[in-house]
Image 1: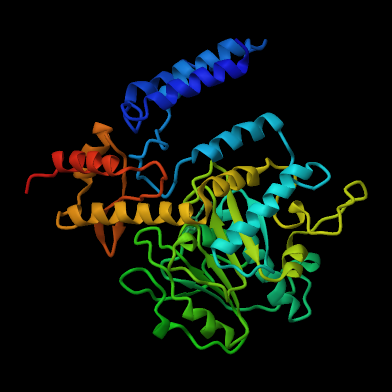
Image 2 (image 1 turned 90 degrees about the horizontal axis):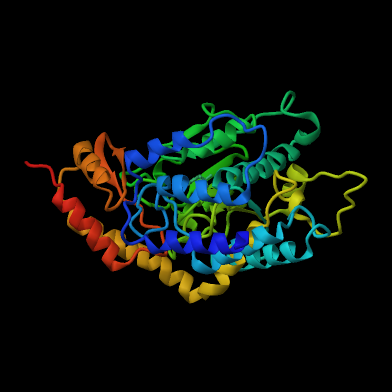
Length: 418
Ligand SMILES: *Cc1c(COP(=O)(O)O)cnc(C)c1O
């Protein structure tokens, strides 16, 4: 057997247990990880032995995020076409930094970006990039915003840094995602210096609480609250535009909702590895003003000699990287516009079914722990308005009606006595 045969055998065995294995690995399987080689061996192991370790020790300790009964965090699974393309792309080992390094990878990425922009109602003139996730997509969009807001004052932030820069207000919703604050911190804009706009009971920015701005600001909207799924109102864009502000949308998963329409914004961050159901790592950023993005992210060197178009590495923080766009291209091609919409609507229908059964029960940590320990499904918890709540994210293409009913049965079995 060559390594491809090994891989096919191991992959088939893994897929075959998706319906039967515990979703979260058993404590024994996790403990067994300590049997893996602890010291860096002085001589290398043969491929067969490495694969044997992976299949016998590591595989049982994986979290079955691809099973259809994994509802922890907003993760998504991997569509079959995306997974296959991802494997082939790994065989090809293309570097998607520049078109001259991989004409095929860059072509597929640019096509996928066009299709995604079209689906998300992002203007065709905006330029996009694949990055590692929505955290980096936020970082990249906000870097373009920082460039633009400071360039308007004649300050070139990429050359001079922030040391002598004029300041500008940064607005975020009270319930903004933690990664947004991290991005602001990485950009020198400050986690805590922001103006937090109060939120309503669903975690949406309250338009009536939106401050009147006397100068251009950086306004960060959110499409998809990680606890409620709620979308900030797109009408806030018009409010922000009255002061010539830059509007960034953190739409890691919510931007894929049929209800999302943020076409008037300036930059958009989203994930491929959530609702598009492509393998990690896959985030996507779009920026309306190509010049702002390339000013923030551009780089040149005598040996690079990039072409006339904006190359991938002039659109994002990374240079050499895997050809993420190939997975996304294959996922989009396999779903089509209708299939993509149906997948998203199916997830929402499953979520409503969970809510209809569970909403009347008091949600406790003991309940969650019992369900997690059984392993039939996996979900997390959160605190919302000071109350404990089960957090059930339905974002995988693989979740079926039967998965939902099996998971509900487990939840009902472990209902705490009142
Ligand atoms: C998941 C998420 C992020 C972070 O995305 P990563 O892909 O984990 O970097 C940011 N914002 C929102 C709203 C999210 O749901």
